[in-house]
Image 1 (cartoon, helix red, strand yellow):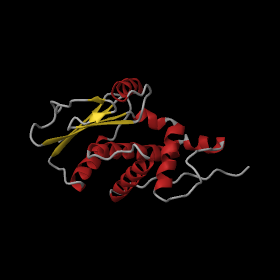
Image 2 (cartoon, helix red, strand yellow; image 1 turned 180 degrees about the vertical axis):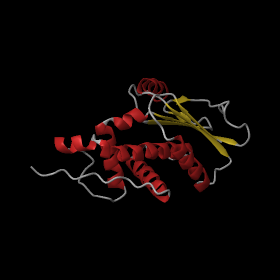
Image 3 (tube, rainbow, N blue to C red; image 1 turned 45 degrees about the vertical axis):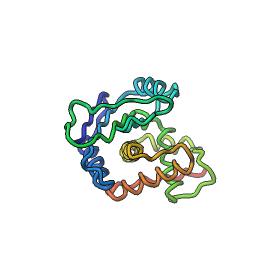
Image 4 (cartoon, one colour; image 1 turned 120 degrees about the horizontal axis):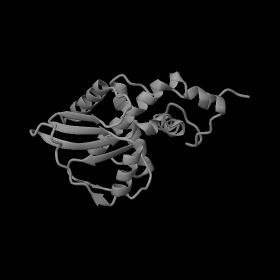
Length: 200
């Protein structure tokens, strides 16, 4: 069973979330597992990130495996939420702060990483230096598709953490980014290509 709880005023395509989670569970042969997802605000995420990881700032996604694996320095003991079926196994809980995706620099950096680690382009580094005209074009309605992709990408990223993947090293992050992109590609979701900045 899948539980999705949006505690924010931001719109969320719950049908797409259900579809992605169900297909993820099918792909990784965990259809007998339940998953809960909560979409929370930046202040709540900052508080939880500080409590469980000792990082006093907000983040985009936190995952708590159902096996009570330690998160940072603390252990979070999870019980299956009341709304989930009591049968089967509990894979865990994902907390998403999708307001982070709305920060231009945040989502541009993640898009750049996806493109670098999946071989879509090969810049010298991960630093994102964009001209003002490119930044403003990415704030327009055309960027909504990019933001939506990244919300789905972060959901899959959280799911990968629930099955034991980690991104504590560069190679681990690279592997998770590739897995997330490949899985979404199987479902028909492709990462948007960053537009090139025009030359002065």
